[in-house]
Length: 137
Image: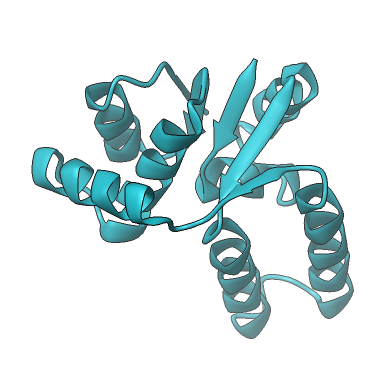
């Protein structure tokens, strides 16, 4: 199954929280895994924020970064092509979500995802509206 994970879902592979086990199972079951080009910067931004707030130690931050980059090497990265940008506009016009969240939905649509995975309720609703099968985590 071609599975697309947004940043909120993919981050659960590296930061233990509710939904982490489900994400791991979905990743293992996927025949292909894709991420939006913005996924890694979004996750690293969250990790760095936790590091600055002293909710994460440097060693753990470095480990997350290393594992993230290893996992991304095996994934398809969907770029912001003109088609993805046009689809992002459509998602923004039909749903009340942020631009970055709309880019993930648009990227999944352009890639032809069989399943869209997110921890964001509004983004899941927008993905359903865009015609994607959705798995909230």
